[in-house]
Length: 64
Image (cartoon, rainbow, N blue to C red; front, side, top):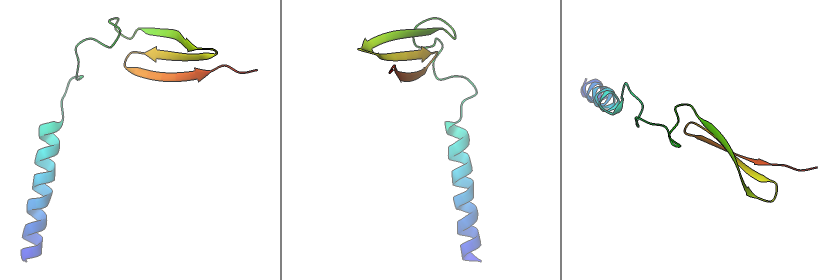
């Protein structure tokens, strides 16, 4: 019985902390780079590029 009560309190605590941390909006008002859903490709080295779309980043290596 005591284990069930402890489990219920644990479940309630996890649920309450999850709901408190959850947000219904994005964490920032404007995306990184300023343009909503903007994208860019920048060369950062010889054949090495960084592709940005909104807050996501990918590194691309161009080879033969």
